[in-house]
Image 1 (cartoon, rainbow, N blue to C red):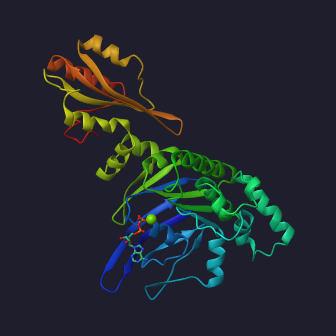
Image 2: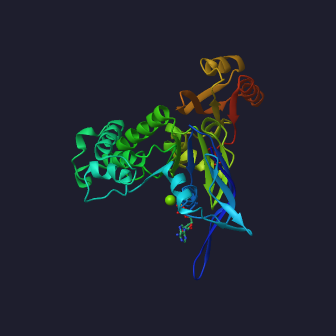
Image 3: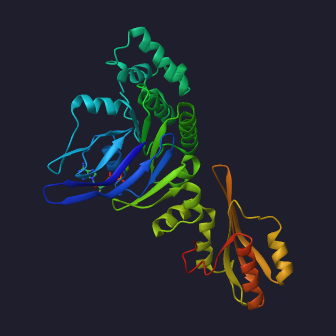
Length: 355
Ligand SMILES: Nc1ncnc2c1ncn2[C@@H]1O[C@H](COP(=O)(O)OP(=O)(O)O)[C@@H](O)[C@H]1O
Ligand SMILES: [Mg+2]
């Protein structure tokens, strides 16, 4: 378990102060894949650097697996002793956007590097390295140099290296941001597999909502140094509250195209009394046949403009954007019928920014 309480971090430069983290409190449970999403400059990297002790917060406290990694003395927060710090760090692995591999070492050498002072004998190191390479599917590349590998393979080497000392926690700072979509997918499924197999807690930093959707259990949204929204991924996708969260979700949803269509006007003109609505079908909503049932029952005409189903942790989250036409009272009755069937109805969606 990682617990952050009221953490603040300000960088003090000669001519300016940058408040990178403001009053952040989070609880990350063992075995979770915990996503942190935010735009560039939101404070995500500063946050993980505080967790693995590369930065010292100005105030607040952080504990990792029961060890308080910050301690106060006269109101000042200081580093742990070198020995204590090493002990905590050993339990935390980290991977980065640009892999940070040693270019002059082979894949074997890169993975063996963190084991150099582990007290293991040469033969034990060798077998541990091959165990790690097997875990990430790279046993045949042991003798290759980083320059001979694809981006996805480099990230696999970095993952093997990060896991060398059996950490309980893996910090992933934009680890897929430099990869193409295919490599991204394969790295994400590797992380998911490692999370399950090793019960590895993963803190996954990203600026892409699609990454969060594909493997995270929980997500925290950061903006200007603060966590502005937090929860389990399905709930956040189904009912985002903050504008920035809605924007992140829209960025990876085909339904966001409604904005473009709406401003173009031609395809979904609602002249003639129609109303543009979004119907959201969550896991407990019975979606099938509801559209035709409603249109028969209430004598309304439902013209589907866009439809989409997201699968989040194996659970469907569906949405339909439709123009509903008919007598005003019938339209209102139809919409409340949808609501009675656990369908979320959003009206005036264009004015809401299509979300
Ligand atoms: N070492 C540093 N010194 C001064 N300012 C920094 C330093 N690291 C980050 N910052 C500033 O802190 C803010 C948060 O940065 P960062 O944590 O890297 O955000 P993110 O990872 O979300 O892009 C930014 O305004 C950035 O310019
Ligand atoms: Mg960053």
